[in-house]
Image (cartoon, rainbow, N blue to C red; front, side):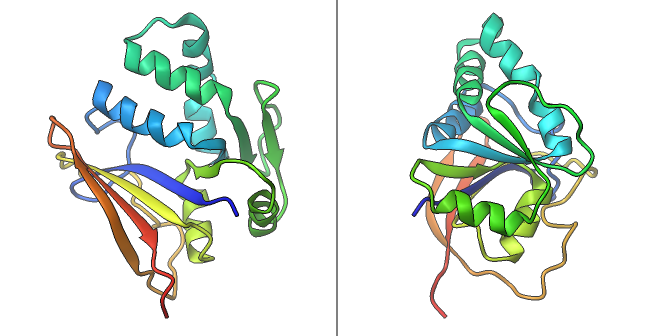
Length: 187
């Protein structure tokens, strides 16, 4: 069965803003390698609108540094599933809008053959984590105190804690640290 993998950038004070992290080739390469193991990304409307059309346009123009261009090429090769009740239009023929039950949609995807399923949105990750449907987490911690922005899982207060097992760590030259965990399945 396919794994569900969530990856997110977090500042040292726990914020997940797209504006305050340290973005460089090493970070893009890390997330590019994560995406190479997937064939679909799940988004909420807000994150989808942050990512599209920027990355597909960059995949076509190839106008940035090589690491950004490669991330864009890999991103553009993936299917996107956007959970939204308000989004009217989507960009590209590899994108689909889902308006139904998120758990049912994910279970259907997990039972299909394919690569891992990436979760790229805080709101979607909050719901799936609370349902116990995320298998692996990549928390990429930046040495920045942002003081603002959305926080991890703040939109949904789970009644249960979730135990994680550390798989690996990676320290970047900038001081960013990537923590890779899997869900602890022991009771």
